[in-house]
Length: 248
Image (cartoon, rainbow, N blue to C red; front, side, top):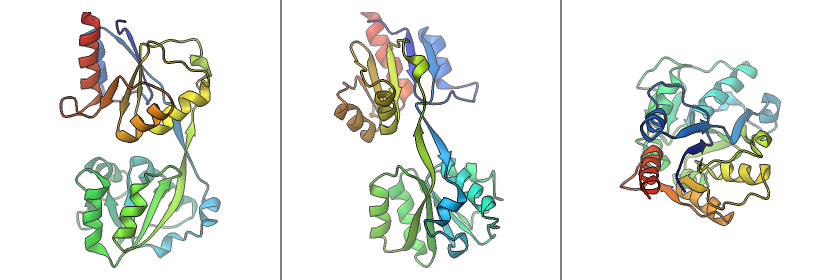
């Protein structure tokens, strides 16, 4: 079947030069965006119930923009003034750049991993005297606590926000040729909203090993798996698939 419509289970890009827009125009396909999951903040009183007192920490480990937003939201709700001496350990350049929304960027206080959490761990290891806080979602990669424990540092995790499945009932009778997923939670949301979902001729595109695993365990066939050396990005993989399928 030819590909004419694609649904990406994420919010629409805010930039005008999005690769998805370029893909849509170039391959003459309709691409819609709809978050299958969204994030809700945990109240400060519930964080206190986790026995978290922000003044006890000298460093914060930030793995995403959500972690940045909710750390400073909670600090404000707790009326805690984040000291200038606080150190920030960011998983990527993107997270570090986003941090500038809240703090004046000073290299001596902001430390950045190259790409993965394993990369960031190498940086954290050099600062064993700090007391680290990991503000996270209720969904956390299993490897993260293991890596931090192996470093033998003083750290604590606190759930500052939760991943919640979105209501997709308005899509009940809408059909797309391709569904694109970026997390296991997106797969969970699909089946919570549509328990009787049948893949049939729908192409399933997934990003990351954990998403592939979740899709496969849910009984889906993954037609597109990203990243690969040939197609490191989702838009590249989608374009390759569209060209192959639509040519037939």
